[in-house]
Length: 71
Image (cartoon, rainbow, N blue to C red; front, side, top):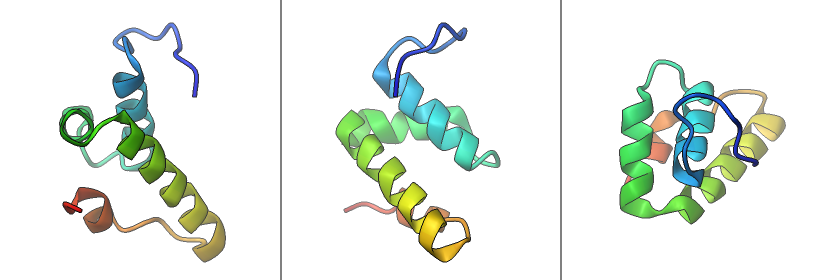
């Protein structure tokens, strides 16, 4: 992922939160940003990868409960 010149995208954490929020529009950007600040940007990249792989193989959306749970 590359940082874009979009308003409000200031760091890799913001970019990852934006990407997650695009996949789950019913959830807020702040929710994902808070999760990323707690768990780290690396966790966000791994989660995005898992979500995309799951969507390709199962042809359905990755359950949000798995994104939210603590590991």
